[in-house]
Length: 231
Length: 47
Image (tube, rainbow over all chains, first blue to last red; front, side, top):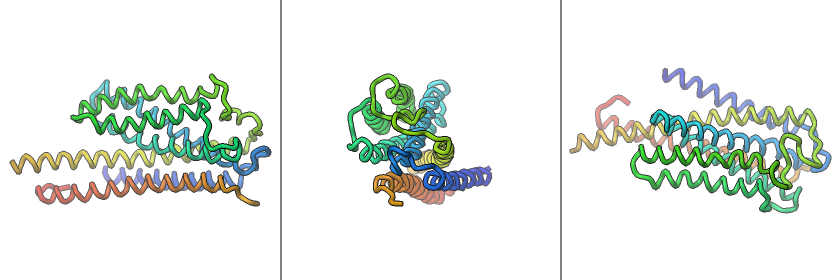
């Protein structure tokens, strides 16, 4: 069983590494140079893929929260916590790469328009998820609070997605490429491969993060056993 | 072809953050496995 798991882990790691290399190759060698923005538009592929992983990770936390409240099983709590950590990292990456794209295109690293503001708030909300877990006593209480928080915090994902459609904003729409951006089929292929590569990377990281949390549980059990023996 | 500095910076950020995340998970896993092995040995249990 353990050996089988390791094989799956290795397959995931290798496939995500290969997919990332292919995506990177396509970004720089296959995708055409965008007419208006020039080469800086190539940031778009990994920026959108990072945002996708962040949103997907928070969706997994949302589902895991429901799973925990329904079943009360620790594995749902482990899944929720592991996914938040990865989602937070990728949303932070999205914000930073977005700022680096915005500087030459908008003339500023940051502006308080709806999408960017919601992204900043979303980051803080999921940072607070970790703070909440650290401040609540008792594993079951902590898991229950975190599950409810993870479900409620997910509202920021559709809010962020629809922000560029509901309000006037200068942020480009991924589906259309945005005003002033000529979106070609080669760009579409590159974006698709980037999304697949990042999803594989997410699966690889999630698997390792879950293993970490399970190891922490084993250690807690052993410590309790050692304490009971010492008494 | 000159590559814009912002493009280089964005991809550098991606690789750096990914590396830090992978490294941090790996370090924490190793530390936990070490502690589990030590404690299991003290308790006379198989790992």
